[in-house]
Length: 310
Image (cartoon, rainbow, N blue to C red):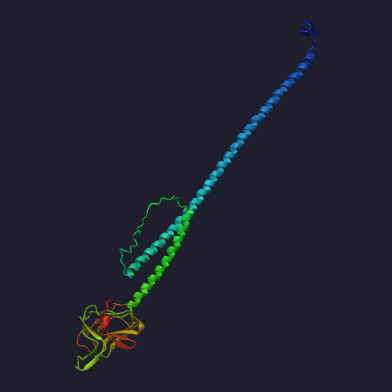
């Protein structure tokens, strides 16, 4: 093989023989170098693509982790919110129960105290109102609401305790009033003989009458003028069938000339309770009840007690 060489400077041309062996010695390294460069370029290109893919995958993992964390935080927030709501619902139920008890107690006090039921109506919501606020407003938070409900619960407990004490005082006061003699010892009747000196209906002589006689219909009810304990039941000279009742503060009441006794010794009787039936037993001229009031063993004029209403 010959290679022709041209020279512009020398204006000459010539040829030089070259063998295939020499040509291969030159071309083969050149081809190897070109192929190596191509391989190296492809390798670098692949690395770049791999880095991009890794970076993309890493970014997706980070986004996925962020989403998972946000979902978890959201679930935890929902759980805490539900716990607050459950706590509020529980306290609200307790407050409603307390209010129902206070309403029931208030209704009893209105009845016991004989108050105006229209004025103290515990079934109605109290009227409220006011001017619209011009200041900035905000919604109350669950912790603030729970705190206010706890304060309201303590106020309700305090009011319930005080109302219970008031009920006890009213009942004690009413009980004391019921244990004090007042009113007539019969449901229907009239005073046929008063307290003090009178002409004896059998002898006509001037004698002292230690009670009053209240006449009425035979077998009509004889009632206790005060609450107390029955201390005597039976027949007694001059009184016929007698009932004696002991009351506080040293008071004693007696009911004589009955046709039938309805109580026994040791019974606790209340004011206005029937204790006997009117009759004419003992030293009597007709159906009536001999009524006496004594205090510490000394008889009193029953007239002022008869005029007092029960």
